[in-house]
Length: 79
Image (cartoon, rainbow, N blue to C red; front, side, top):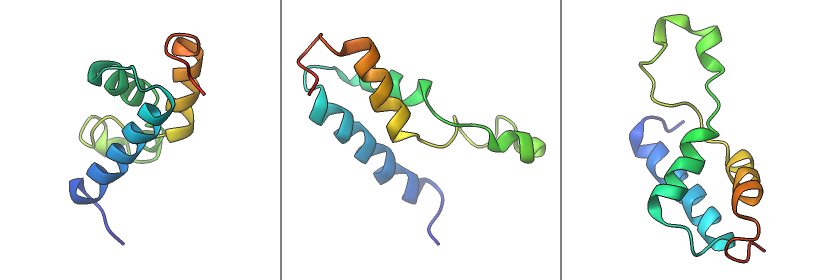
């Protein structure tokens, strides 16, 4: 099973591409904000020793796209 930044980088890039495919007018900072604000970090509850040592959390593509529709639905023709 793949892990680490070698695995997470293409996953995050894929989520960014998904967001941009629905909202092509967003800039990099807006996409980054959507991804960072919707990560799931509940694993810290199970692994308290790793709190703030494992990055921002697990990427949640559904939550990121859902938030994009809430924030930008009419902004740039979200489809």
